[in-house]
Length: 177
Image (cartoon, rainbow, N blue to C red; front, side, top):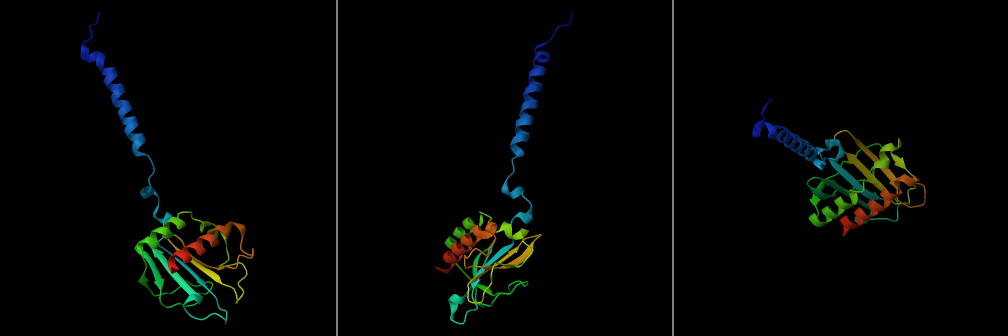
């Protein structure tokens, strides 16, 4: 007849405890965090603008363009008219407040811009010269695209893009004032 020592009797219990500790520790370490997401999930920058080509509009309010990047919120001092199929070449040298930047980041967390990626056209909606239009440019590690979007809220923009129009209005309102 074999005699078990106390150590031999505890060995299965210790092995079970160690196994459970390893499993629990491993499960805790496998939780996905934002930093674990691929770099292309986060934009290098987003440029948002509103403009019109209408003859009745003159001055600063006719063209407003802002850049949001990891360093902050910046306003363009050139105020060029954007064009379809070309990326905006602005002079983003006027840094705006950190409070505005943080508010805009909260709006962008909705990611209402994502339906744009499914569109093949760079022009969205009726771009009549007398209307205001939005410019939206997205740059990440794997995507660099831009769009001109009708800002008249006349229903010419696809339904999936409508929430973005509201976000862009809000972002421009935050950045301008």
